[in-house]
Length: 441
Image (cartoon, rainbow, N blue to C red; front, top):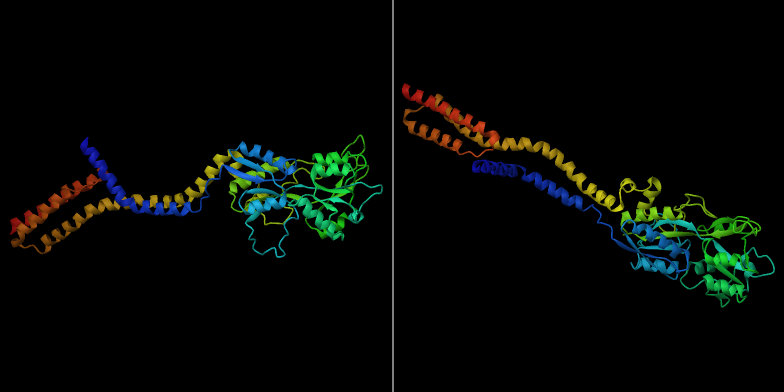
C-alpha cells in the first residue's frame, strides 16, 4: 500500500513539474480576464423623482416593485423637480432620475465629448403642457396671457423652466405676475379666480389635470401655433387631445385640442452597473409600453430627446431587447452567468490548446530520465566495440554498475516502469559484450 502511495505521489510530482508553466499561463490569463469582469451590481440604488403627488414619484414606486422581485432595492426620493434631480445625479446622491425634456440644452456639436457623467436611458412618456385659464373669450396663443397672473411652477422644477422659455418666446417678461405655484395648489388658486392661468405639466390621468378639466369656468388652451413651437423647440412634440376622449358622456373636450409635450426622460449616472440599466429598461417597458391618450403601444421607452448621450447598454436594448441570459434566467443568475462567461471563456481558450500539448510534454519529461541513461550506455558500447582497452576493464565494469544502479533508482510513474526494465536489460546486454571482449583478450 505504501509503495502505491509513494508511486502516486511521484506521479503527481512529475505532473506538477511538467505542468507548472501551464498553471502559470492560465493564472496570468485569469488575472487579465478578471480586469474585464464587471463587479456584481449593487443591491440598493436611489432614484430621484418629483413631488410625492406627481407622476414621477408614482412611476418610480412601480419601478421599485418590479426591481424588488429581482432582489434590488430601489429607494424613491421626492424632489422639487428636474433641476434638483440633475444636481442630485451629478453629486451621486442618486443614481437614477426623471428629467423633463428641454431642461438640458443638447450640445451644438453632437460629436463633442460629454463630461457631465450622465447618460440617457431614453424617454418613457409624454408630459403634455396643459395651459388652463379663466376668460370669457377663447385663448389659442400665449400672447393672449400678457398682463395676466400666471402660475408657472416652483423654483427648481422643469415646468417653471419650460414656462419661462415659452413666455419669453412670446415677449412676456418675468415679473411678479408669474406666480411660483404648481400642482393642486395652482389648481385651487385658478378655481378661486386668484390667478388667471396655470402651466401644468403632468400625465392626462394626473389628479390636477382631471380636477381642472372638470372645473366650471376653467378652459384648456389649444395651441394654434403648435407646429411653430415644435420647430423652434425640438424637444417638444405636437399632440392632439382627441374630441371626447376625457369624457364621452359630457363630450369633453368638445373638439380636438392641440397641446405641446416634452418627454420625461430616464437619466442615469454613467457608472451605473450595465445589468441594472437593462433591468430598469425592462421595468420601463412594462410600466410605459401600453397605449394611452397620446401614445401608441410599444412607443415607449425610446430615445426621443438627445439632451444627453444614449447609454450604450440602452442602445443595445433598443436594438436587440434584453440580454439573452436575462430572457430565460432569474436576474441574479443571469448576472452571475454573464460574469463567469467573461472570466472563463479566455481561460478555456488558453487551457484547451495547452492541455493538448501537456501529455506529450509529460511523456517526454519522464522518458528523458531514461534516455539520459541510454546516451551514456551507447557511448560505453561504442567504446567496447571500437576502442576496447583491456587496461580499462575495471572502468568499464564500474560504469556499467553505475548505469545499472542509476536505472534501478529511477523514479518514474507506474505506467512507464517498462522503460526502466528494458533499460536494465540493455545494460546487461552491454555487460555481455564486455565479457565477450574480456575473454577474447
